[in-house]
Image (cartoon, rainbow, N blue to C red):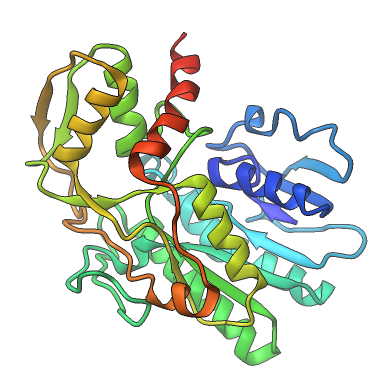
Length: 307
C-alpha cells in the first residue's frame, strides 16, 4: 500500500514494485499529484488505485505486507497554498498508516525529507544532526510535519515493536515532475525551453544536491529491504550552486535564456548536501547517474509538456 503513489516519486516507486511482482494499492487524494503519472500502470495486473485522503482514515481489505507513506505536498509553492493539509498528512496521516501497518503486521516505510535539517548549521548533513528548523516560518508546516512523522514512526517502533524504516529524501528530479512544481529543476527547464529568463532567488551561491529519480527509488527500496530502523539519508552528495545549475540547464537545452535575480524566500536553506556514508556502508547504495545524464533523461519529458 502506497500513499501518495500518484505523485512524482510515488509513481516511479509503484513501477519498481510492480516490476518486483508486488501487488500495489495506491491511496492518493490528487491534491498536488496527477492521475496521469499512473498512465501505463492502471491495467497492469496487481495494480489498484483509490482516490482517498489518508489524513481522514485508512481501510485496506485483505493482507498487506508493506505500507509506504509518501503522501504530502512537498514543493515550496505548496506550503502557502496547503499548509493545513501538509500538517495533517504528516501527523494524522502518518498516525493512520502506522495503525494500518500495525493491524496488518506490515513493514512501514516513511518517506521523510532533508527538510528535517532545516537551514543546516552542519555540512554535509549526517543522520545524527538534529537540524535547525524554524517551526513558525513559511516552511514550518512541512518541516515540522515530517519531523513529527519521524517521531510517530519511532514511537510505534519502540512502543509496539512495529517494523519501521525511515528514508530522508534529498532534492530529486526526473520525468513526472509538475512543470509548475516551483522547485529549481522544473523551474529552470520550463523557463529555458520557453526562452524566458531563468529566475534565481538570491545570489545563486546557495547549493543543492540533486539525485535522479531512478537512483532515489533504488535507495528507497534498499532502505525498505534493510534491517535498519534508524533514518537513512537518500540523495546525491554531489553539490552544485544554483547559478551553476542555471548555466548547466541553459547549455543542456540549447536555450538563449538570460539569468535574472530575485529576492530569496524566507528560510531558504543555504547549503544542502547529504552525508550518505551510512547508506554506502549498510545498504551498499549510492547514486550512479550524473547530473548531465539525468538531465538528458529528463528533458524529453519537459519538452513533451511544452509541446
